[in-house]
Image 1: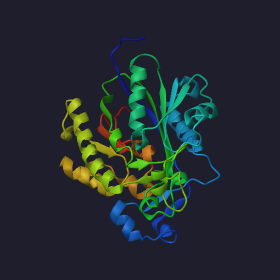
Image 2: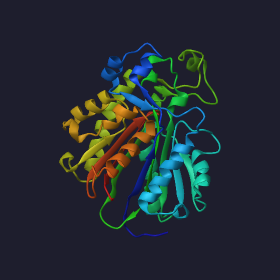
Image 3: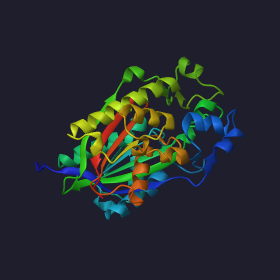
Image 4: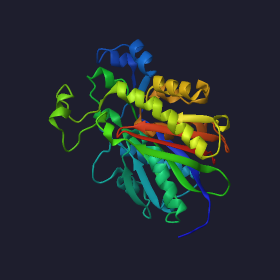
Length: 333
């Protein structure tokens, strides 16, 4: 094990999303809703939907290939694959194991992480610990979400929110002062019933809270999530900036989980910063893609040169559990 002090940063990114677009106008024909209602309450205009015949891991595999290419690494050089997902194709094998085999990353161990929409930052911090300890050199983190497969498309309050996507990032040692500077992971299990997706068991209460005869779909207490999300995103963002001995003036951009535009705007207001300092563009065109939303934004921003080497970026998410996560990264690419 090495004792050398160094930072861990992102060496390359990639993303993938389905071709099918589901617009608000499409939803008007499916459920009792309107384009105006959806826009006002969520800020979402459209979302991508995976075909029923396609497994989610295929999106993750494509995102992984792009991230490897961006990092100039081969699959054989990856030591560990971490997949964040709360909509896997299988409980076993893990999505990470499937992708490891399809990718040809024969030297990598692999496992999944489920921290719901906080999952990418949870996985990023896990990758950092493995690399800083000297246990692994390169870790591939992939977020894969096919929420359309666990959505009740007749439930008007939830079906307007979710979309499908995958995104990936390769983590490794960086030789300068860039990379992960600080982080905070948290969970409040006393609020675990606020967002639920039953799997191998569903209680009478679970079944009573769902309609249309669908047991294994997302249920969410929207008002509780909204209050929690605005508060925790504010607290988490401020904490990781303070832990890095910086101020909000030093931060180039905050990239929050793209769950709901009203939540993002509420957090920006509580932080006392302008909305143009908080990335929110992806919520309009992809909807809530759970743990994929933050790395999806990172890939888009990196490839368009909207973030550049040396920029201080705050990543902040929240999700079922209830979980939250934040990290301050000085961009390495």
